[in-house]
Amino acid sequence: MHDNRWSDLDRPPLAQAGLRRSLVRGDGLWSSVEVVPRTGSTNTDLVARAASGAAKEGAVLVAEEQSAARGRLDRRWTAPPRSGLFFSVLVKPGEHEVPVERWGWLPLLAGVALATGLSASAGVDTGLKWPNDLLLTVDGEERKAAGILAERAGADSVVVGIGLNVTLRADELPVPTAGSLALAGAKMTDREPLLRAVLRSFERWYLRWCAAEGDPVLSGLQETYAAGCATLGRSVRAMLPGDRDLVGEAVAVDGDGRLVIAGADGGREAVGAGDIVHLRPA
Image (cartoon, rainbow, N blue to C red; front, top):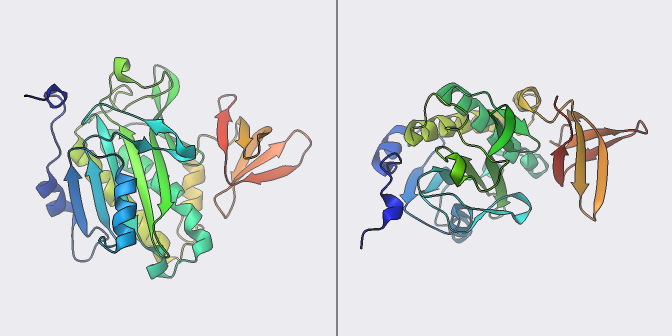
């Protein structure tokens, strides 16, 4: 029986062979590119492969559809087949002498790579909601169009997963606060060049960060993240572990990638985990 989930001609499948030819080079980061029709979670699959020794640094796993995709704080999300880019990459910062205490910058690095790659290839204005949600403007409102999840995959390995809404239409959005490149008026929604642009951007930022031994200042990562962070300068509510809320102005991203919030009492607190709500525009 024909599976009509795959009959949308506006959403052609990704060409694995072409992606491999353009991305896998002897002197580059990417060692393999695999595209699968459907899986539960590319992060789960790649973490398992890394743990078993079956994947090398630079492995890229892409799924046309995910049935059990996970985001930060164990949130679940779904999207129609081939409507976005759903992929995970394996990196091994430990092999590049990056101290483990700096690995927390990896999801922020992925956010910078995603934002800069899309700005160049899709021609859209992007913003990063701390720590790593990608925001696009749809109908005059900021909407979340992508999320990032980084997970340890062994003593020296981290798997970074990205889910990006590309061609989702308004009636397909999972929640009213979601968006997509198409709804934001992107000049291009062809997923293959978008994926190549994002992966090349990630490669540049990751290798630069590794060359600086993970130093966010020397690599330029901290400055670039702050420049593109839509959270800074806003009133925010941080919903922290232990059912504690912190309300104040987001004033900086510190050297550990934490969000620094200035409270009404004049004190400052650096937040490393939690859910951030923007209370007013920048």
